[in-house]
Length: 149
Image (cartoon, rainbow, N blue to C red; front, side):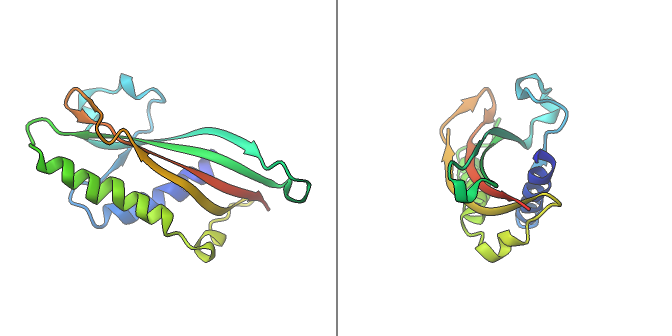
């Protein structure tokens, strides 16, 4: 399940990277981002699955709701206020909009051998004012409604 969702999400990041000046890079070598070195923390993201719940309905027992969180680290050291606007508009909001705009038809094509994404819902950006040292650290969370195929 995680591998499929990660692959799907990375296609979204690839599309986003095609239109921004600095690419977002996935953090893959640590589950706990606090242990990353400064060299690895420039414009990065970490994808985590928060929880999964089976839809409680006898007609939809093959459906699950998967809660996904995306953590970001944007270096802001010495870059001034303009970088905040760029990050919110070009990265956080752009990703939120892309997730919200996914059509049912496009999602129906997002299928692995055993799982299909049917709906994206509850897209939420938060910690839009949170800094950790020289890093701006916003987050996005959303739910995926999936179906076993």
